[in-house]
Length: 164
Image (cartoon, rainbow, N blue to C red):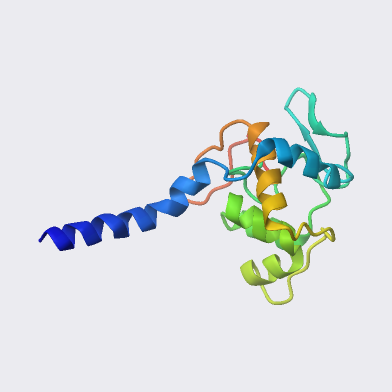
């Protein structure tokens, strides 16, 4: 009986680990701020009042404020998304640390895996160093409000909610 309970305890911890890991970034936000210099050519982190918190006021890519837990391809006011990224978000996908790291390593391969074999990405830059990607995620998360829980029904966030 004791062995069974111990095994069940470890199994439940193993299943909970991805959820727990999603809550707190595993990277170093200070290091991520330095690495974000590679991203700021296209992206900015600016709060809803327009205050630039990270990067420059770039407009090639979407604002990354509030990215953790946000639906993919749906940042209000940004019209440069590819159809496949929009489709991913429409189907209920929200950004997590693990998905962000996989996406920035190879955006096209990520979309082909998640959407369809012929999926395409408009993001050509790759951040293939996993530690750097984790650090950038931690930096973005440190400047963003706490990630909102994804709706259970996969519906898009409410009007006025920060989205990708």
